[in-house]
Image (cartoon, rainbow, N blue to C red; front, side, top):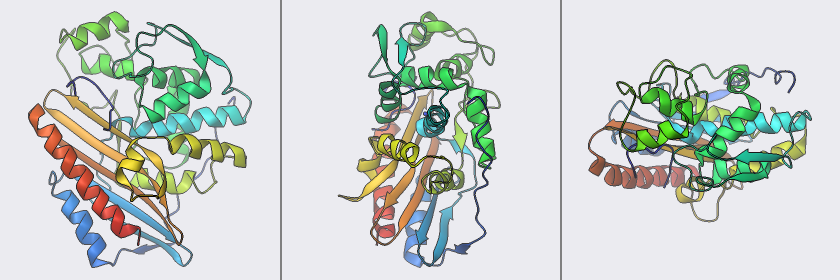
Length: 325
């Protein structure tokens, strides 16, 4: 992966109603094997590898975690909030998945395997699918420009996610990390210079106070518990569409046990010597649901990425296999 390419795994007229994620009925985690699996994952990067699993059964909810309340960089995992806000706007009649959206240099962004170098229009549905399935950053910027980043942040606040933060767009994130002012878009020409490692100022860390993609494992797992419960959307067909698109993310079948239904989104970054992998979502079993998030942040050379990703995937898969029982 190019060290400056974000987010691969391999985001109404009125505001949405306010919902608070409820942990009142949560039971403490008490299974040694499950806790041991999460603790093993945490050793990937001590202090900067965190996990959260919220298990929903008919007899109650249990929360398992390690370092789950620590804010870390999660990359494209936050695109789930952009998808949710866009579908809320469709539900309210403000937007349409059938509407044509423009693609071109005005929105091209690095990390776009689908829409880079393409000019023309496509449906909003294709934009949302590319944003989640392929983590296409151009698609992400088309979607977030349509709904407005402030309204996505309002949604995040309305569901009581206090440590989750999104950028104004992926291009404004890249611009800020490259030394531009917060909110400034260097344009496609600036992005090309950045990819050639020519930046307008001192580079900044991905975790910062202005343009970032940060959350906690606890908040991401609780988000999927909330949104997939049907409490966010007013219409069943909106939830069905959210599930359909969320099931397309390539990180989900890569992490879940074979033949297991799941929804979610992954993310990553390589920026200088800073790296991240994350995956969050829900797996659906015959007897229960497990909402999960695994995150690792670390600093190191580029050649540390393949080994860390392999361990991230192996340890995450082993943990989720235990939670599928």
